[in-house]
Length: 60
Image (cartoon, rainbow, N blue to C red; front, side, top):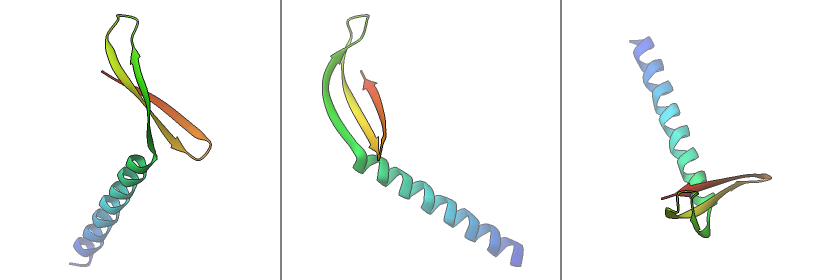
């Protein structure tokens, strides 16, 4: 019974950490603007900023 409770607590903590990471990502997303690929497909660029780290993603 003790192992099941420990496993359930670990699973709950992992789920909570995942949800917190998703929330931080949603709050750090900054729309940059529209863009085009080399194949001339239109889309938009979103920059994710985590302190000094920046990640730019293109969504079509």
